[in-house]
Image (cartoon, rainbow, N blue to C red; front, top):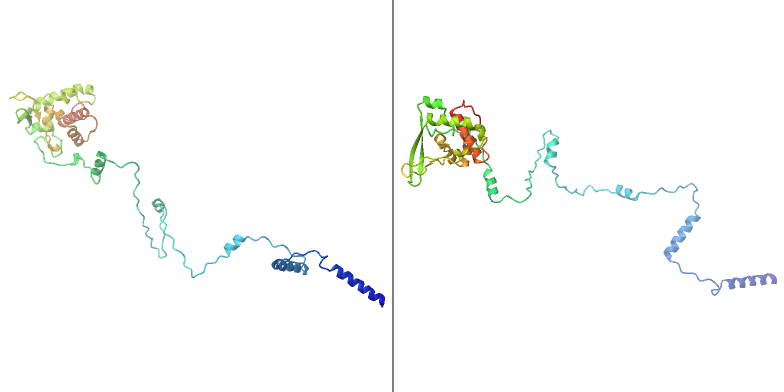
Amino acid sequence: MSDETNRNEINLNLDLSLGSPQEQDPVEEQDPVEEQGHSQFMQLLRSDLPQNIQPSPPQHYMMTHVASITIPSNVPTPALPPYLPPPSVLAAAPLPYQPSGQPIQVETIALEPLHRGRPPRGHQARRNSSRVGAVETNVGDMEIEPPYPWATNKPAIHQTVRDLCEKGITEIYGQVYCKPCDEIQTLGYKLMDKFPKLIQYIEGNVEVMRHRAPAIWTTPKLTLCATCESEMKPVISEKKEEINWLFLLLGQMLGCCTLEQLRYFCESIIQHRTGSKNHVLYTTYLGLCKQLEPLAKFEL
């Protein structure tokens, strides 16, 4: 009995000596949250789990998140602005149709073209503005009242020499102006005297002239005044359709016309009317001679 009591006392002393606070290692205080997590982890390890559990496959969080988005039915959908394709696409693509079968009217907006560079100024701007809405008319299509007995109802178009002789028109009259005397005089030319000489001169020099008027046409020799012996210039009407072309031809005074008046004649006979004045003057001489004698040996 005594031995057993002594043994218990020794064990008690050993326990007290081992559990004294002076001899135990210091223990750091743990966070309650970490302690709770540690306890849950230990509990899972101690639990009796099945052995055939496979690890879960990796989840695609982005795809799962997008697929899970739902739009409530009561939220209104924002209205998008209308899309207008370019006119080229509208012309190539067929028009959409409504359920009733009627075509939908698609309205296109015509955009003004962009002009690059500086806007026209000065003479160019005035020239372009004058052409807006202008309708080009052909002089040969006009009909007028014949201003002279040897003219026709077409501007700058004349009868033939044969027709004029049959009608008794053998002399062509016109007016000339003397500047020193300041008076207008009437001058006449015999048709069958002047015209054959002119035809003979053209047929003999047409190859030499090479579509250019000679000096005797560009600087014509004018008739002298009987009073002061000064050169008298022909009176040329400001209205182009009233110019006395046949009188100027027989007196070889077509060189007194301006370039614009000569171009008007070439336009009336549908001939090339551009170039220098001596070229247009050459065309005017030959054009008038061809009207009076269509069987002449030269060609325009």
